[in-house]
Image 1 (cartoon, one colour):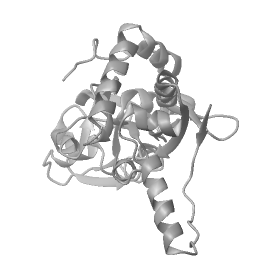
Image 2: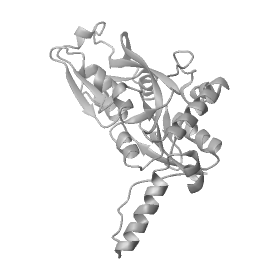
Image 3: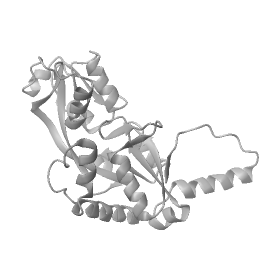
Image 4: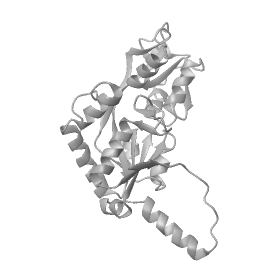
Length: 275
């Protein structure tokens, strides 16, 4: 079984000893670094990125489900413990892991050199194609066509770094807390284009009947990158276990099965790389 959690106010405690004891228990439960630690608390707490359908959806009870949650379920099942899902966005995911709020992240993080200074990044478990989305009539066949345009991105994301680094005269990068808000900025006319995962954009365009207004601009690919899980730097054993888990999920066809279930296609890019 698994549950979703949300943040709440922590009430004041009445004694110094009780405060210290509670802090110790919280540290032990939230900062699990080994499989044995996770088994001991009988629960794995996983930060899962939300706000990016079709990779995630909201079920009839208001909880998040989807590709990443199914992977999280498989992790918990293979360890043999319960699952607690903590929804995160691009802006909050790193802090949730650094603070010990979660044991690991399955949150569409690319293993950049900068992130590898802070976390242990696993071998990739999936891939995505990043593209610009813009009005059908807008010319976008080369990067210079973005001169003088406003482009929305999720704050702190890989596309934020990529688009911000183009150095195009007059290009304004407009940042939002997550992918859904960045896409909505385009739909509502706040920006001229957005940078988004092609599968996500096509899903939004199809579900909202926007095919006559917006399209994925395939002539100017931003990049194709891979998603890794993340654990804290001292979680070496957990990191190795997750690499083994990802390897087995791929060779058994489970990753493509889940991607087909939620996205409607196998994971793009062929065999996943290892490092």
